[in-house]
Image (cartoon, rainbow, N blue to C red; front, side, top):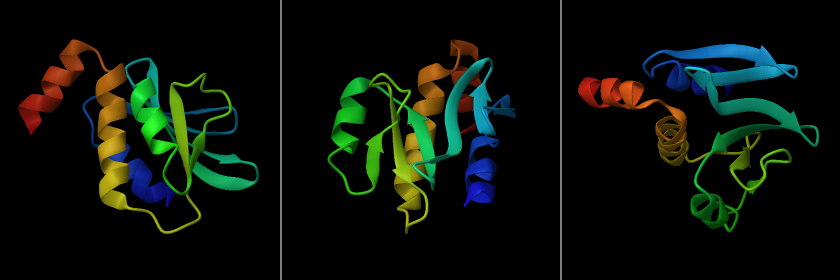
Length: 111
């Protein structure tokens, strides 16, 4: 699971992986856009998204508020079958939200 998340995240322009708080964090520049961590003893993927998107995802099975997210992060349990098309879209949305205009432009040029 982590290997798949890592491969997706590191495919973005200037995305990096750092370790903080005992788990991998994926950053666009200096801002984290995805984390892979254990929450409540279960593996989870956390995404930084717009508040309305967080609210909508919380209505879906497997999603829950990221404990530290202040309504700006949502997590999905990663020890279950995932809709990888949705996970990819959420990673993309998260990257675009935190990336600088220069990084977003680089992403759009590569597409």
